[in-house]
Image 1: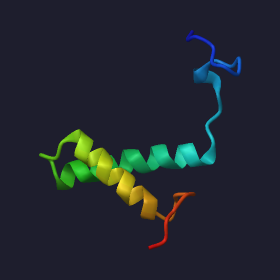
Image 2: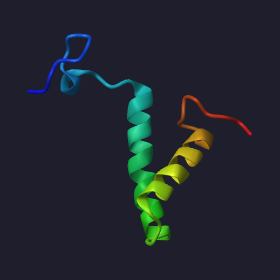
Image 3: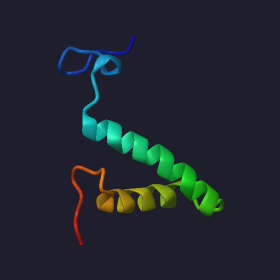
Length: 66
């Protein structure tokens, strides 16, 4: 069991919010897609692109419409 967080609940027992779950699902699917499209891309560049795409994705609660 991990060390308790500041709130007294171990991190592995905290419930994830809808935004966190949406981000994790988006990361998983987008990362797999980008790996197929650009197999030689570095992981750091892939993460940068995922964050850029997330800002425009309709499932993102913090979407920036531009």
